[in-house]
Image (tube, rainbow, N blue to C red; front, top):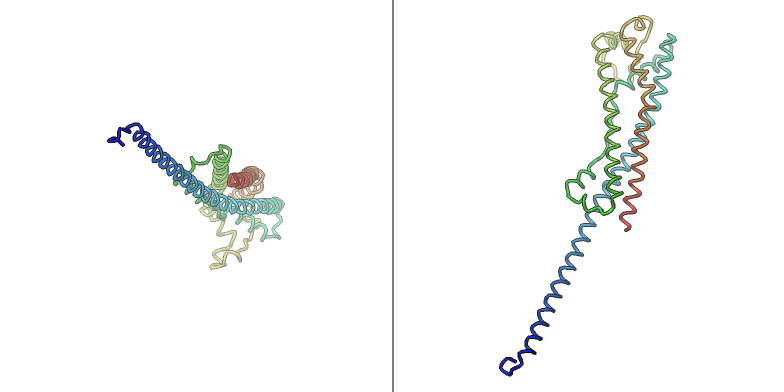
Length: 241
């Protein structure tokens, strides 16, 4: 073309070729971005699905614990009434009530999905602020429940230690006369002699706390359960968008 003095046609042809190459590159980049975005969404959805599974398990645990606390409160109430009235005929109720307060109940909330999401760096890919806020709000509620339950257990363990040091437990359960009994078979002998010991007041304090605690703790459990159910709905809605 140059030899034939057709420079303008050559330039137009070259420019056209360049434009086609640029367009091809842009299309390839766009397709790559779309593929990357799709992959990121799928990965994010997997983390959210794991969180959803964890929350469902957490809610089952919380409902079980809340039910257990309410039942223990009734048990502590009955045991307190028996001891205060010096009615020692129902030793099993008294023993079970005290054990319900001093034996730790395992409370395991599963945070694996949430921790994996944070460590992955995908948390900032959530494009819905409400969903992100709900996730943080839910795990704050979980932390609050754990804090209250731990505080109760630490307090109960301290009182249990005082009962052990004073020798109250040994006398109450008659461990010297009935050694090597399995826990489910242990029934104490709460009587007038124990009623006069200092450990008696500690026992009443344990039972009184056990009676009142569920009324205080119920709100925290209910908040966690409510937010958890709301979060599950938000995750399912987010995955549909």
